[in-house]
Amino acid sequence: MFALEYTITLIEPVLVTTLDGDPNDAVTLPYLPGSAIRGTWVKAFCKQNKIAQLDAHNADHRALFLDGKVCFLNAYPQLGNLVERALPTPLSVRYKKHEKQSVRDLAFDDSDDGKQWKSADTPFCKFDGSSIINVGVQRILNIHTQRNRKSGRAQKDDGAVFRYDALRQEQSFRGIIISEDQSLLLKITSCKPVNAWIGGAQSAGYGKVTFEVGEINESWTETGSDEDVDPQRVVVTCLSDVILRDQLGAYSPNADVLREHMGIAKEKLQVVFAKSTIVGGFNRKWGLPLPQAPAIKMGSVLVFENLSEKEVEQLELCTQNGIGERKAEGFGRITLNWHGALALNTSRENDTSNPPTRKGVAQEDKAVAQMLLERMWWQKAEQRIEATANELREKGKGTIPPKSQLGQFRSVLRNGMGKPSIIEDFIQHTQSKKDALKKFSRFRLNGKTLFELYNEPPSIVDIKATIGSADVYNPSPLDRHKFKTKLLLEIVVQLSKKEQTA
Image 1 (cartoon, rainbow, N blue to C red):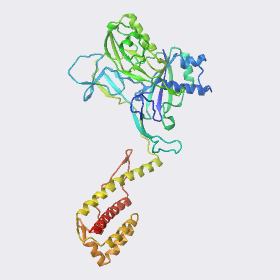
Image 2: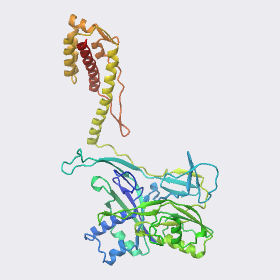
Image 3: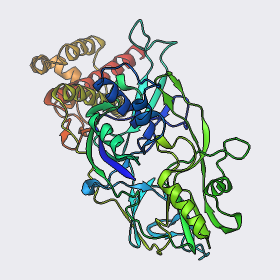
Image 4: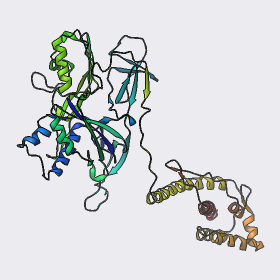
């Protein structure tokens, strides 16, 4: 079997949706399906050959993309700079509850030790001797609103809110294209895409990727191992979803149906760790979704014992060619004895991964972010002003200044919100008049006159919000002036109302 390996790097978030979740949510798969990759290659092929679409009657077109001679396998996360392709975590792998470092493989030993073990929470992994490396994917959640086509914005009856849960940009995925005919892979290489788009919402800033295509491998195996199979104990692991039909032609995600397709006797199936899922897709040629079908979920494990030589040969053939339907799109991949031969005892995270580097905020975006942070600060400050004003007013003692003087002071505070000199000149002028100063001095809040409260306001706790890891918004001197001015204005307004009701 010949294989063409390549790496896909996400330039923008990628949204390849599943059938799960809320109707107003679009949740992506944790990998790039072979069907989407094949579509990208078809588009590059048509562009290179200057044709609008594939011709189903053309022998070359059929051999490359339509009749299953070339299989586009799913692209799974790449293990950092190791240029290795992670594989789905077997469902037989269990982690000790609250101790993720402790792990066991029930395909090797399913005895009851009295402890609580839970399923893996990372979709992919790599086995390294008696250890397992957990491999996950990074996601990004964006909120969108539906826009009216005429007005270009959301409206009252046409503005639904929905979410995109997509694969985060700057991640790398490793994909494989396999064929028994090397000449077909050479043709595939000649029309390789460089910059392309995968998935949905491409006009909304999703889906841009780059391809880096390697050389053709003449001795490729999906797990990197080609050791002989021991017929006494064979562990079959599904490396992708498997779509099968039973004898009546109905879709059946059943382990017994999988066993029948492999040609193995029923009594030789010892242990099963399997789940089912629903698979679908989208055909851009039709502009319609593909029919949904139940399938055996990737990672499912079947353990056989005492197989005959013929049964082992049949399994090896299924491993090479795949099993079930839609094999050209990456479905139906299985492997033999990838795990289950060793007792797992340790688990670690993928410390060799290359997490995406955070880019600096653009200058225009930074200005917008600063404006948003300032509004957030003032939202908190307004709440603080109202609470402080109420607290100080309750502590007020003495005779409230006349309504005329409070009204004059209120006008000065409003006019001097952005010009501190206006307020300072008024206070200085009032203090030069003994009668006016005496009327202001007879009333005190927490032991201070209104003028003293302006010069020595209550302490302000800085409300900081962060952009990234370094850019911080701090209240400016003008913000602090506005804070104490608004605080004093709130107090004066409340005193004026109290004076009217007295």
